[in-house]
Length: 294
Image 1 (cartoon, rainbow, N blue to C red):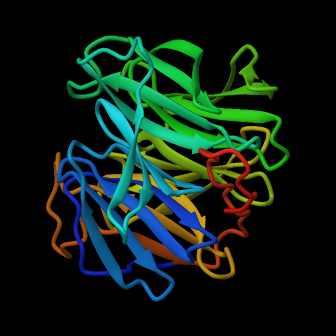
Image 2: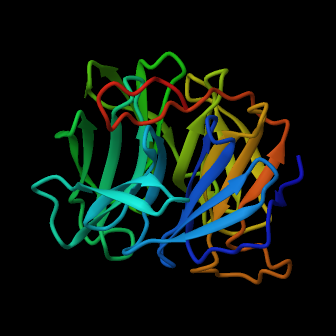
C-alpha cells in the first residue's frame, strides 16, 4: 500500500480525480493553473488549457464536463470543441464551482463556494443539473466537498471542509431531491480536513484528509476503518479507477505547504494498488438520447 506518483506532472492545486471507464483514463484538474488533466491507462499525461480556474470534472456523454468559475464546458478535450453550459441564474460573480459528482440518474450534483480561501461566508449552494435545468438541493455551505453516492444510489455523501465545520453528512436521495442530512463522520479528532471523496463497491467511503497527509476510509455505517498515510501534506480528492477498478487515485496540491516536501511529490497524482474494488462512475447525460455508460 505504498502510494506512488503516476507521472512527472505536479499541480498547484490538483483536484477532482475521476476515472472514465469509456475512455480508460483518469481525469483531474489543476485549479489555479486553469488546466484539465488526463492520464490514460498507461499513465501518459495530457494537459488542456481552460479559460478560467477549472474547479472539477466529471465524465459526460459529450466527453467530459468541466466546471469553471462562471460557467461549465462540455466536450472532447482532444477536439478542443467545447460547448458552454451556463451557470444557475443566481450564481454570483463572487462564487465559483468546487466539487461535483454524477447522480445515479446521470444528472450532475455540484457545489459552489466563495472564491476567497475556504469561503468567506457559508453561502455555498448545492445544485442539481438535469436535462438542462438547474435546481437547488441545499444551501448554507462554506466549502462543499466529499460528494459521492452510495453503490445502491440511495444516499448522497457530502462534506464541508471549512475549519469551523469539518463534517461529513449523508442525505437520502429520492428522485432528484435530498432529504434531511444526517451526520456521517466528524473530523475533530482525525488528521486533516474532509476534502474530495469516492465510494467503492463494498460501500466504503474514501475521503482525502487535506492538510493531514492521509486518506481516510469509513464503512457504510460511518465507522472509521482505515487511514492510509500519503507522501504529501495535502491530498485533495480520491477516485477508484484503473482497468480493473482496483486502484485508488489521489490528487494533491503543491500550494499551502507547512512542512518540507523532500521527495518533490506535492501536487502529484498518486496511485495505490489493490486497495478497493470499484464501481464504474456513470457519465453525466447532457444530450437527449445518450446511451448510459461511464
